[in-house]
Image (cartoon, rainbow, N blue to C red; front, top):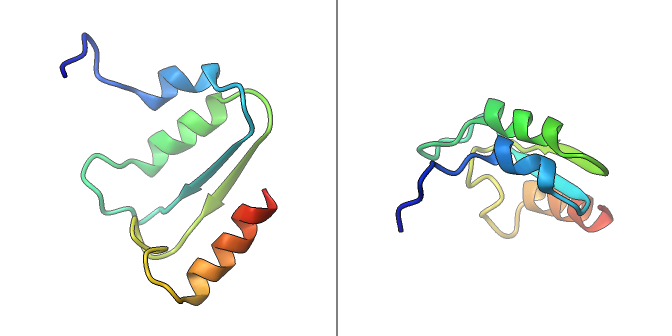
Amino acid sequence: ADTPEPWNAVICAPHVKVPLLMIVSPEDEMAGSSPSLARMAFEAVPGSQEWMEIEGGHFGLLYYPSKLLTKHAELNAGF
């Protein structure tokens, strides 16, 4: 469905009312992804937040089993 304005995470971010864990890849290859926009949204969120960068692009955590998936699963569980 069309919306009057394109969705923008930075505009929505100040309304987040729960702790936030953002897992971002600086090499994200997905069309429309923007690690710098993700950082702006992260910085606009009030309250408890944690930023985590992953290697391997958007699908870096896709492969099981892998050391990368295990590492970030443990960090995520600790959040």
